[in-house]
Length: 430
Ligand code: LRH
Ligand code: MN
Ligand code: MN
Picture 1 (cartoon, protein in one colour):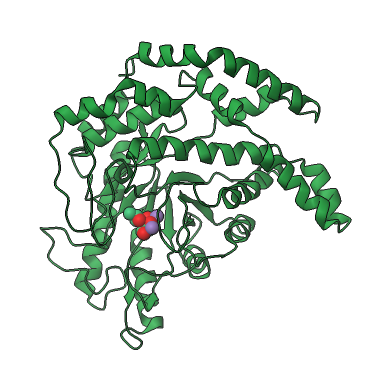
Picture 2: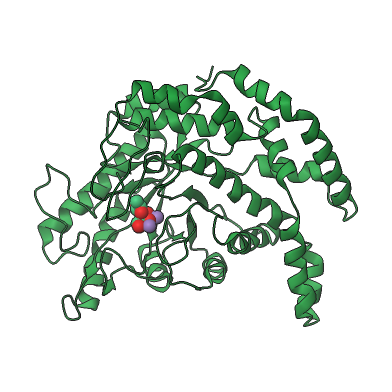
């Protein structure tokens, strides 16, 4: 029996209040879609099978490099974080896995596994951290990690990644995501070629320790913390890494890690075409790596990314199973509410992409009818699919309106009485 973080009758009472309106909305949308020969139940069934992992670090209040303003009932440790992830999954039924960050979440794997299993949760990709120093480490990452000029520092970073694989294996995870902050702040500070050679050699060592059924995701990021050059700065470099390492290596696309206005959906298409799309860190941004809630600024772009994913599904691309993870930092909202809302926005983009009339789209493309081709995407995007999202949640035992049910539950006040208040302070994401 799965341990429920929110009493079942609280969710049921909130659902009861909304059930009549929801049933009628779902029927109306079903009729509308039927006119386009779309079976709403088939779409709902697909949506119910779409999942996205919660980042353990996302359930705590983030911060900027200027300050952190903690909220009430901040999780004290990974077990509290798992409880919060349990709430999100209970209400959305879209987030059955958690993506851990090591060493932030490091603890006895059997205890971790037992806790997660009790909550009905599993583990998605493991994330290593060689972008900050932990108290007990011998060599600092101030000047880099996997690409560091010093061999002992590189070895320490490699061993940390191997430790993440071992921990993840004990937890049932099947992938390791590696993001490094390595780079330089001054022209001339580092040799572009030599640092990339050292990075590749370090990654090859990590790759050797990868179990057969694991994947290794490298995550590119244009800048920050290095502001002049980053070793893994864009998808081109990322593709070279995955190509050099071998078939188990793929690229991870964090939506916030590109220059403004970059055509991310096209990057996604390219990586799919060459079998190198490993997965995503979903979030939204206006200027850079803002880590805003998915779909909060540019929902159409999120839809266009999903349009590429559904197109790949439609074309029957073999071995196509990108990992879906959220990577956000919450500064002004209750993190649980933001993550609930983001999981829904991600599913919304998927649902809308499923509604694209792909045969007509292809026809318009072949006729060079740009206006109607674009209209095919817009028509799907304009469809209000909330009733499908709610129905998928409801059928899986979740909430029609998960944020409302969460607020009605009083969960935050309850944990605030158990978890001591945390003082604010300087920036950080832990
Ligand atoms: C880097 C990043 C990466 C880290 C996470 C905390 O900006 O996106 O994925 O692991 O943030
Ligand atoms: Mn990321
Ligand atoms: Mn980031």
